[in-house]
Image (cartoon, rainbow, N blue to C red; front, side):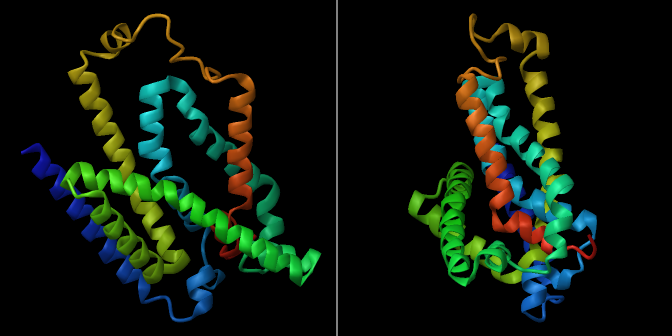
Length: 254
């Protein structure tokens, strides 16, 4: 029964996502609409685009698994995301929006020349392909656990679905997906936390069952140097990745 409910929720959420993205597709009539939404996004819509990218397989399934295995140190990804957004908003947003460009490579090309722009474009593309691997792994894990699909089938379905969402909505579609994911995931997390507390006998009982002499509550359990490098890498990744800056480029005003 439980497996059927999981599958039903999954299919229902997928249909909701598809219908809203397809509805949004009517607004995409040219390249500018697809890439930067005609530079018409409000501050809230810019936030949805960024959230829709940050809140993915790594920040949900990956972080949960890491927290289960290693404890509070799993906070690195979400803490790094928050710091990155703070820096992006306070120190980069106005300057980036003022440039009226579409891509990071185009922005850098204005200052360092066309050859450097081609070089950055290649590196940026490679970075995107590396980043998407984590999302593939998370999606495949969900499909395998809910529907028990073989990994090749899960990989194919994930590839098709990602292609559909990318082609259908463009940057405004990414914002729509981000908005849905935000409310959907918060609801799921609150429900799951409640179930865990009830089944675990309350927070006190859950804490009492943790192994003794563990460093579950030590944020620097992997070492201060390693943790600092991980956070720095997270911040650098957000400040140099196309989709986060493209959200800024798509804003209606500075």
